[in-house]
Image (tube, rainbow, N blue to C red; front, side, top):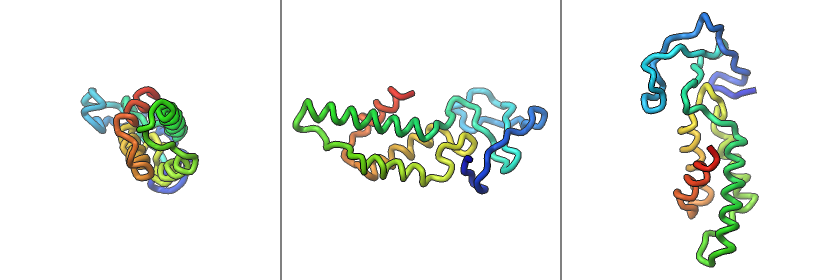
Length: 142
């Protein structure tokens, strides 16, 4: 089940004959001026078919694992590194992501919006983690 703005249901694409011709959701992401886009028959949300598609929550939990490994590795090399990312902190970050309605919904969310939410969630729990470290982890995950 995917949570959407209009309740819990599984999105169902409309038939190809009913697809709508719509402008891009973001001109920076979608280069085509008008596209034939599917929408959910139940709630009416338009599916994001551009390159900025939302990822599943597992993508971000994997990124947190990679971040945790990198911090541990840096900690072993230098005394001036940031503190460990604990299991409890990882759990808190994941809970923050899960609390966002439609976080891994390809109809209601874009990947760039997910990245912003992910960064805010990590910074809320661990404000000492540099932004450059987060960006390098996410670039490697793509």
